[in-house]
Structure formats: C-alpha cells, structure tokens
Length: 477
Length: 97
Image (tube, chains in turn green, brown):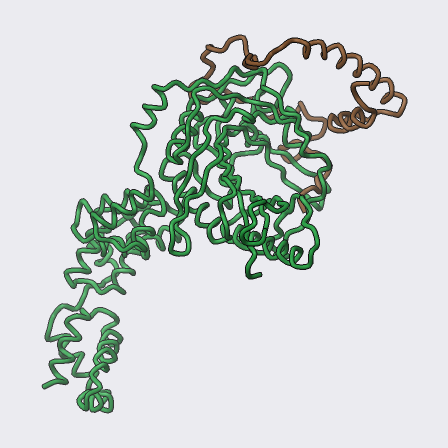
C-alpha cells in the first residue's frame, strides 16, 4: 500500500544469563527434567519471600549502559496481577512506573541508512513457567523450571517504520546481548522473545493510528512476515475507511496471517501495585561506574575495528562477529598467522559448516585456532587445494587431528611437482583438441576449462595456480 | 455510593470469584463503606510528599548468584491436585490460537 506510513514499537524479553533465578537460588538452566529446579519461592508457596539476584541487576545495568540509557539509582518492583496456570503466585514481579533504565537509543543500519531507534525503558522482571499443551490428552502440563528466571524487558519508542527496520533492530539488539554476555538470545528457544505494537497513518499525519499488538513471532523471519501482513491489513482497512480495532493478535506462521487472540477479556486490568515483599532497588553510582569501566566491546565497535585493523570487508566482519566466541576465535587465529582475510573466509564458511555438522561452538570444536591457521597456511603455500583442505578440515573436526595427520590419514597432498602436473596438462590438451584449437584462435578464457579438467584427472590434487601457468605455457607456445 | 455493582462483578471476575447477584449487592455496600472510610485520607494535603513504599529504604536486599538447594520432585508434585509426566496438570489451555 503506497503512501501509508507504518509506526512500529517493539517489546523484547530476554532471559538473563545468570546461574540462578531472579528471586531464589534455583538453577537457571534448560533442558532439565521438568520441575526439578523449583523451590517454595518460584512455586509461589505461601510465606516464601523473594530475594533479588545481584548478578541480574548487574547484567541489566550493563545492557542499559550499552543502549545509552539513564540507569536510575532507585527503582521499584511492582506486582502485575493476572491468573494463568503458569503463574503460581497469581502475579508477576516486574517493574512498572519506576523502571531501572529509561531514555536510551540504538543506532541501526537498515536499507543503507542509519536510523536511531529510541529505547523508552528497560526493566527487570521474572519469567513465568512453561506450558506444554497435550491436545490428545486434553491436558496442559506446567514446567516451573522457567518460573522466576530473570528477564529484561526492553521497550522501544514507536520509531520503527518498516518490517526490515524492525528486523535490523532485533538483530543488532540480539548481537549486543550476546557480546555483552547478558543473554543467550535464541529466539527459537524462547530466550529472546518479541512482541510488536503496530499502527498505520497517512504520511504527514502527526497523530498515531489505533494500534494492534502482535504476539507469537518466534523467529526473525516471522517478525518480518507478521509485521508486513499486519501493516497491509491495517492499510487496506484504512483505504476502505473501516476502523482498526485495538486488539491483541497472534501470528500464525502456518496460516501466514494474524488472528485475534481468543480474548482474555479485561486482561489489561493488571491492578499493578508496589511489591511489598521487596524494598526499592538501589543501584549505587559505584556499581554503575564499575559496570561502565568493565564494559566489553560492543559488536558495532568490534565490526568496525575488524575492518580497520584486519582489512576485512563489511560483510566478512559482520559474519565473523556473529557471536563473541566466533570473533574471539578469529582474533586468536590472527595472532598466530598474518592472513586475516583468508582466516575470516575459512571461519565463516568451512569452520561454521563443520561446527554445524558436529553441533559444536567455537569453544567446543576440536579444530583449535592453531590447527585452523596451520591449514590455512598449507593452502596458501600451495600444498593443499581448497577442495582438499575442506576434506581435511572435515576430518580434523571429527578426529581432533592436526592438518598434517589428517592429510596423511586421507592420503591427500597437493601435487606440487611441476613435471607431474605438466604430464596431466598435456594429457588433457591431447584429449580436447577442439578446445585447444579455439584457445589458440583467441578464446583464451578456455584456460579455466583446461585447469578444471586437470583438477578432475588429478582428483583435485593439482595446485591450480601451477596448473594454469602450465596450461598457458603449453598453449601459448 | 463509592462503587457500582458492575465494578464489584468486574473485580470478582479478575479474582476468579463467582458471586451471585445478592452477594454482589452486599459487597457493593460493604466495599463502598470501606472505600468511603479510606476517602478520609484524601482530606490530607499530600502534594509534594513522595509516595511511601518501604520502611527499610536503605536495606541491602540482594543475594549472590549462587545456586541453592531445590525441592525434591516428589514433594513439588505433591503440592498439585493433579500431576502427571513429571508436571503439574491442568485442563487444556486453548488461549494461544
């Protein structure tokens, strides 16, 4: 719908990477047996009292500073009251009219320009339990391992104007969470969740249209699709002078449309009031200064530094900083061998591939940085073709061998002997007299064809640089 | 009256209490008189007074991020009127579309 402006605000929930829950000492951990990490506090048993996890506060302060917020030395917890089976106390402890952080921003690159997205607030709250719906048995099972897990909620100003911008914001925010080591930030596992408020208006209109709230978008792709769908739905309502109804909508990924949430009627009446079981949250200047002083490098800074210091392209740098662990791995490699662009290339393509296959991370993969740099050096020295090196890397990843041992096991080594390659080239030229004639008549780009054939007959072992030199030598003479 | 019957029913619904018409009328009367009593507080001029939320403003009230003991699963599930598959069980929630 041309000529219609979308106004989008996002609410992001991210689980904090603490050892224990927000208000009790139960482990904050995943994939465990249901309901084994619970205690009277996170089960909401009568008389149990919450005590705030200092680490959760520190992580939220770190995020607040990274997002250029004002961190308040005094903020309050509040009770948000509602009934749901996964909320054992009948209320969620959150922050309401006095949040920890306010008034920040994040610069985001989208569509070739930089946009500044305002951060209205960041506050601390606890997660609810997890509901597992068993349609067949007509039962819902509740796992309270997630109950009381610390969350930050990040609320933006309605400064976002397109699904692409929303997606760029979320990716940058997620990257910051990872690099600050504040959260795992995986959307599919629900440690990073996003809701959106969407409205549309005619260009130049200063008042906001009626907004809808979008939920249930559990991947970046779904966020883009859901927003695009909702914007065009509202635009067509506006075009036909029908009103937009303020409501909560769920994105249905399978139907690819938004559907009204079966109304939790009056659900917005949460009757917030100050949490009587917790004193005000006091964060002293010294803590804020300490967190500021120990702030890790932000991903945008790191990306720019990688371009400057190592001469990486914007694209390669973005790929290398996908996670802080990958970026650390890259830097360790660069300290061993001075070949940053080759190293970046091998890391972002082949290393990422073998880690994907074995389910490893840069910290757990058997291919240690010194082994990868040894492999890259062999390729650069012409002792391995790219194709062979990939095979060798696959073996290294499986066995933990260094490149030399993996090459021996696989029986691969680049054919570096000129006479051997010369013989192969002659054989190939004799087998393709037609192409040889056309080359000599001026179609010199056929050199690539001959090299390809040489690689075929040598099972990829010939050094391609040497092969092309010999192909030209023979055909040009 | 300080409160309508509609409001009484609304609050009852939010608290998942089911009350009949007679009870609603009685609660309207009783809650109304409590609210009227509390209204006396409005007679005090509190402009410029910070809302009071806690007696122990300065109390340090955080703990270190160290794991503590959890409850045995058997004991946890004993809190539930219905349990199965290691979890609390409730009738199927059909809220999410």
